[in-house]
Image 1 (cartoon, one colour):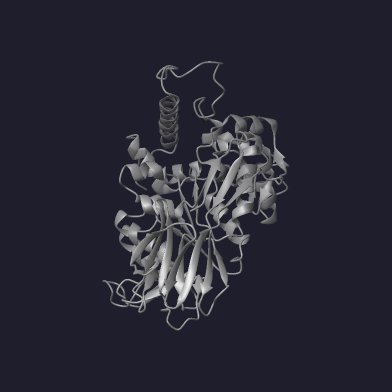
Image 2 (cartoon, rainbow, N blue to C red):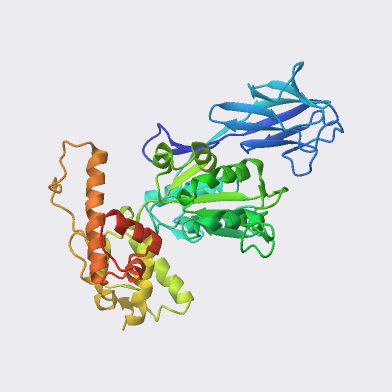
Length: 459
């Protein structure tokens, strides 16, 4: 397990704690050979794709595994023929302490933790592949990405809708040793619940009604590459153990099959939910959370990146020009710059991109003018295009005697409700048009409308 934690060095300073283990053969055919492994589950056996491959004929193909978890390190025999021993005792499962010697077949190994703590400083660059940002928040993100991209560490990317979680996954893949292999994207929130298992793990012909042919799942399709699981917080609870097994065992079993297939996949997951809260509520398994959050990276919302707005607009216009859509537009006029800085951007960078793309065909000169913007943005109420409140002012429902978290939650809830009411009213209750303007997917905005009991048309 690896984690990013704040350090005493100061605000924004971070460390990545990479948990590694070294196994050294002290006796047997592979004597004096050593393996350094940065996985939480280390497979030992004669099978060529094991993490520790042994040539001892008394070692089973899949002999044993070492699992590093929150509560310690476990050595587990996997039903081997000749057994796993610590001292004279044959074991099925035992906790290992550092420098413990154990024997599998005629081979003796010693386990030694070899963790590494890496200081992560903000990047000196204002971009990382398709991501841009000159502010401290994004340069800290880039600093982490630069460190973890070359590894196989599992990553959980969190943040609001539209902050660029899929772009992060593609950037990590492009900078990894897997770049020449596929990256496969799966959105748990968009797939029909009954088909999630078949999509991820595949199925055999006749496994269920409608399974007219054998089909590989996305884990198999991503073999050798990266699987990006978006909205992992939407994964049905009953399927979470199967995903956990795939991550730990690095193998999958199709629906209707009795045979497991090995897969070599780096998993990057994303969610706009607080998975720690989901765990506490019993909607997400704790063991799966800690398995996918080996590195947890939070992307800041656009409203906290106002210093990046000019750079983002420049980047988006350059990209539009390369695609032949910019029509000679090079920037924003002063009124649009002021509006962009005041606006709350609930749809984040995705909404900014949509606004610029929508405006370009209506531009008559080299800059985006107010006339080219969507009407809903031009007529945004003060609560949406929020001018700064007077110093010390708080909404009437919020008291400075409240805990900070409660006060923030009330302010955000009030803004969210007001924004959605304005948005859905402007689009005559049409949730599809409202979702496009907000830069949100339809399912997410529908969930928020139901949460705030706002009426809409299901079209």
